[in-house]
Length: 99
Image 1: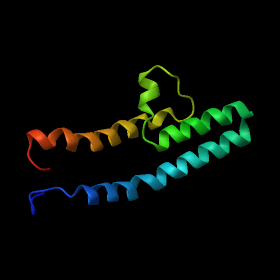
Image 2 (image 1 turned 180 degrees about the horizontal axis):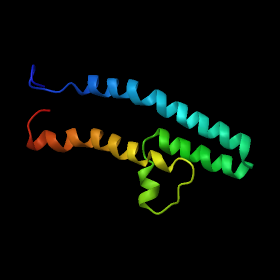
Image 3 (image 1 turned 135 degrees about the vertical axis):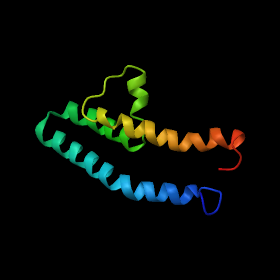
């Protein structure tokens, strides 16, 4: 921003994805495999749904609506952070000029 006066959000999101997605995908895969190996099938379905929700960065939505999370509840903070980074530029573009 200091050099150009703008933020290149494409580069920001790319670097962010390269940094966070490998660890998230590995976490989700390990969770699904462990639950599949150690728990009965009903738990596997629950964790598959949770993995999908976590992979879409919306884990905080079911939590907000008091739907209990079980295995991947800790990913709520990534969801909040991702939503912030997606929505903040939209909210700021009107009042702060071009971001």
